Image 1 (cartoon, rainbow, N blue to C red):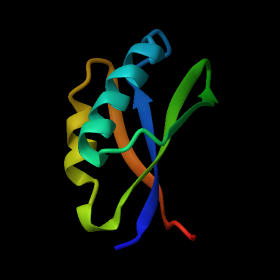
Image 2: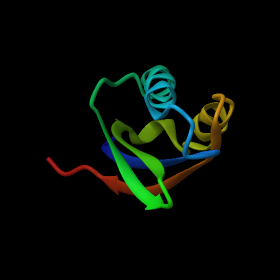
Image 3: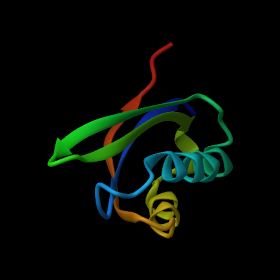
Amino acid sequence: MSQVVITLKIMPKSPEINLNTIETDAKKKIIDFSQTREIKTEQEPIAFGLKAIKIIFVMDESKGSTDSLEESIKTIPGVNSVEAVDVRRAIG
């Protein structure tokens, strides 16, 4: 099986939420799910001080859907929504 590169977009409930805490907790859940440490994070300004967290990681295609991971990340305090915004097959 090949590897896929996933981009998750995590939206906090408000601009006052500590994004570093959400990012740390989400990374732990991603590592448990994908068994990888190849993770990149960035914050994307949305509007009025609200920022989304984008987390990019690599996982084996055989794991299938990220639905269970997304549901798990939604349980982190302060998270409003989680969405897989990009899924690509890795080349090489």
